[in-house]
Length: 472
Ligand code: FAD
Image (cartoon, rainbow, N blue to C red; front, side):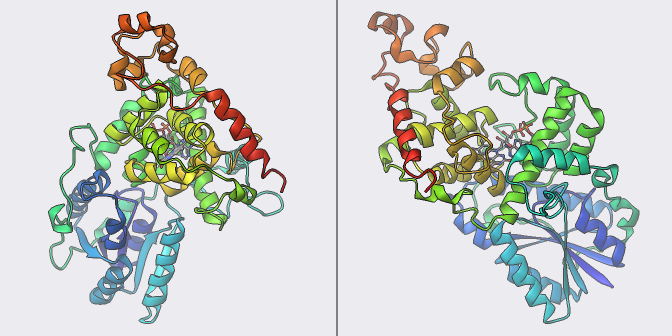
C-alpha cells in the first residue's frame, strides 16, 4: 500500500504525527506541499517574508527527505484540487495530514476528504500542532473552557509523558519513496513572488533556524519569568515563526519546559498553553473569527477615523512606546508580546477603533501571524474575548512605558527622533517645556507628533462606549 503525506504548517521531517502514521501504515510514502493559490492571492503584496520563509523551509525539508530516500513534491494551485489530483495520479490508498483548526482550513479538508472518498481514498488527520485538541481539555460538564487559568490547570493536570513523546519517524523512514518527477521546490519567481529581506533581518528559516534559536533560548529559559516583559531586553524565545510553520515540534518544546521545572520554564510553558488554548477556542466557538467571543460586544459602536488608524499603523501617534512598537512591526515583522498588548489596547481603547482593523494590520505584517493567537490576542485586548477581567481594563500607555521600558532604551531604538530626550520625559515628551524640547533636539509637533488623543478623555469615552452595551 502507498500513501501521500500532505505537509501544511508542519515543515519538519522528525516528530511529525502524519508522517509517522503514514510511514507506519504504508510501504511506499510520498511527500507533498501545495502553495495554495487561494491563500497566496489574498496576501497584501507580492513580496512577503512568510512566503519566502516557507519556500526556504521547504528547500531544506526536501533535502532532508532526500537524505532518507524520499523527497518533496511541490505544487502551486488551489490546494484541495492539487492534492486530490496528486493522490489519484500516484494511486495512493490514503492521504495523511495534520489537523488545522482554522475554519477555512477545516472546510478545505472536508472538501478534500469528500472528493477523495469518491475514489475510495481516505484522508487521515492527526493532532500535531497542539499538545491537546479542543475536545481533550474540557470542564467537568464536558464543555470547552472560556477562561484561561482553569483551562491551564486542567491542561497541566492531564499532561503525561505520553503527550509530549516524539513520534519516532526514523523507525520507518525506509518506507519513503522518491518523487516520480524527482521533486524539488519552485523559486519565488515561479510562484509569482519577489525576493524579501528575510536574510537581512536575521531570520534563518527551516528546522535548522528553529533549532539554533531554541538552543540559544534554552540558556535563557530560567530567566524568562523576570525578563519577558521588557522589550529592550533579549528575554523571550523568538520562536513564534518556527512554531507557526512547524519547523519545531510543540511536543519537544513543551516536553522540555515541563521536565525542566523552575519558575522560568513554568512561565514559558504557560505561554505554550495559551497557544493550545487559542487553537481550542478557534476550533470550538463558531462565532470566531469574525464575531466577538462575547457576542454582546458585537453591538459596540466603534469610531471611524481613518487618519487615526493611519497614525497608529505608521507609528506616529505621539505616544513613544506605541510608535516604537508599530515601527518594530513594520521593520522586522515581529513585535514583543507586551507591546502587542499595549498597541492593541491603544487602538481599541484610546483611538476607539474596531479591533478587527488592528487584527488585519497584524495579519498583513506579522511573520508569525496565526489566526488563532492573533484573534485571541486582539479580542483579549479589546475586552471582547476570553479574559477573566471585567471589560474596563484599560492600559495607560504612559505608565506601561514607564514600567516596561523605564529608560526608554527600546523607544530610542525605533524612534530616533527622541534619542536626545531625557529619561524622565521619554514616555510623554509633549510635557517638555519649549526650551527643554530645544535642548533635547526635538520640537514636538514638528519633529515628532503631539499625542493624537488625550488618554484620560479617551478612557472616559471607552467606558461610555462599553457601558452602552453592557448587560444588554
Ligand atoms: P515567547 O514569549 O517566547 O512564547 C513562546 C511561544 O508561546 C510563542 O512563540 C507562541 O507560540 C506562544 N505564545 C506566547 N504567547 C502567546 C499568546 N498570548 N497566545 C498564543 N500563543 C502564545 N502569537 C502568534 O504566534 N501569532 C500571532 O499572530 C499573534 N498575534 C498576537 C496579537 C496580539 C494582539 C497579542 C496580544 C498577542 C499575539 N500573539 C501572537 C502572542 C504573542 O505575542 C507571540 O506569540 C509572542 O510575542 C511571540 O514571541 P516569542 O516567540 O518570543 O514568544
